[in-house]
Image (cartoon, rainbow, N blue to C red; front, top):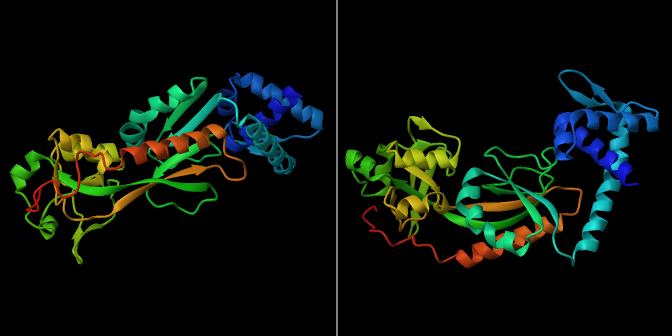
Amino acid sequence: MSDQLSALRLFVRVAATGSFSQAAREHNLTQPTASRTIALLEEQLGNTLFVRTTRATTLTEAGAEYLARIKPILEALDEADHAVRETGELRGKLRIGLPSTLASRVVVPILSGFVDQHPKLRVELVVDDRRQDLISENVDVVLRFGKLQDSSAIARSVGRWPLVAAASPGYIERNGLPSTPSDLSQHRFVVGGPAAGTGITFSKDGVDIPVEINGNVVVTGAEAAVAAGVAGLGVVAASLPSMEREILQGQLVRLFSDWDIGEITAHALFPSGQAPKPSARAFVEFFVGAISAQRGKSSVKPGETPASGV
């Protein structure tokens, strides 16, 4: 029974990833062993499940039909297993997908508390600034900044942080300190940071001042955007956790702290069509609790710096 289930789970992963090699790695098998396992399954079924070429591995018509029938059964078994283990200690492996800034600035600093609570659980952080696919990458839960795209995944809001604008002391020395948000229209921005878009709106006391974002340095990751700001390449707008350390250390100067430029929300996403792992749910609950405990403790708060600009 165990070998049969292992073969079926391997079949599902090969179908999801389109790769015998990747599925084999996930199951701690060699690629030849994975190939033999699927070949034996095909022999037992009397039908071919995959078309294998040097470029791709795709399901046959019979394979697609088999997957449609087998996947719900395996998901139901997983849900039953999770329900039975609900009161027991967490074991096995938990794969958490998240972008680099959320990983290094938010999750890693609090992770020891979760790991200490569950010493028999192996936690894998799958760090990638692109949007990960929960199914094909075998991720149990993903944390994402920003608005959710249309998705069949199960989502939960887990935290929100203010967006802030900042520049390095060197940049301010060379280009001057803006006295009002509208002055930023004459300044260079680091383009493409987490507060990306074509503009930012500063709001206070019912007054909205839109500022267009222009610059000659474009980045696609928050960490690089903050580093570019520290290097004096322009004004950078990002979530407070993304650059709180640099502000506290004086590498960046927060601009117009008494103005609101919005906030960014983080969500936890679980794969659809199956019960979330107890370990994934436990991590999300821990994360929400830890973030809630930190709220209000930040050393960099709106209104602490002069209203004249910094």
